[in-house]
Length: 293
Ligand SMILES: Cc1cc2nc3c(=O)[nH]c(=O)nc-3n(C[C@H](O)[C@H](O)[C@H](O)COP(=O)(O)O)c2cc1C
Image (cartoon, rainbow, N blue to C red; front, top):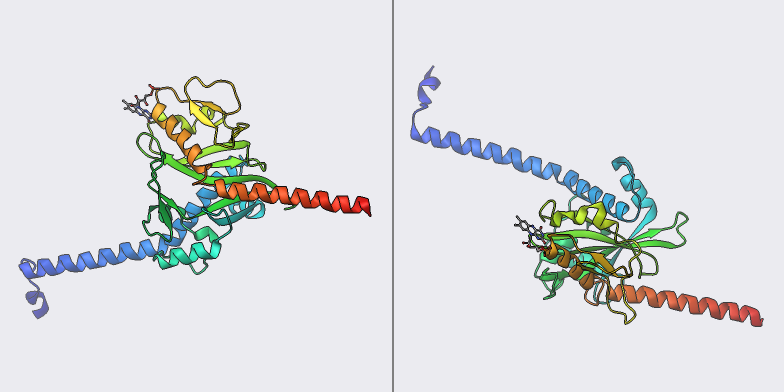
């Protein structure tokens, strides 16, 4: 009875105390839920990413329950230094850790390298400033490249590159799939953008996407030649711009020029092409040796 009397609901002090207790309890519940669900969120983000990569590489009907398995079986994930085009997984993970990036879960894998986070950081170990027309401002030092292997794992069937750049309103993020010759486009898909539905948003339409397969990236002079323009001529390089969305279309064009050029995946592509030439030369020499023998 005495305790009933001692708790005065009207007292300002008790009202403040109750509010404080409520705040603490609520924030504890929210933060516990956020921390507890973080690994699930990360897993879903990764799943969505892989589903998009599979789709641009030509795997259209993979059920979400099978995405990780199909991806794991057929894709090799590379983590490269963009400036040299060479593998740099340990440098990339080390740079991320030094920059204070936390990873959820115990396992630290290449897949956890957070490219978009790296691109937003102004720290020189993980990003470089850029003043190119994609308006991305910073470009990550290290990037993932997704390599689709044949079923027996013996040959490359496609390369998938993450690409991004500004349209009219937003950063458009997507994946470009390229044939093993690193010259012919296999497909382009966008998984995130904020362009206007019906105008710039048509970058996700079949009409726009279906124009990409078969187009050639580089012209005869070795420069990026694929482009998005109004009233595109019927040639190997031109994609018809979206009507009423010239700014978005130009953004996609600039994106191709940047990411396939020397500041983007150019050095990686050069490395791979040089490797192919060397392998071809070695094979020729070997078969020459056999002939002689
Ligand atoms: C509400 C509104 C939304 C628009 N959204 C886009 C867009 O997403 N992408 C784009 O390039 N242009 C968009 N535009 C049009 C641009 O302002 C600009 O007029 C257009 O890019 C020019 O293209 P055109 O030369 O094909 O007409 C929008 C215009 C308005 C009024």
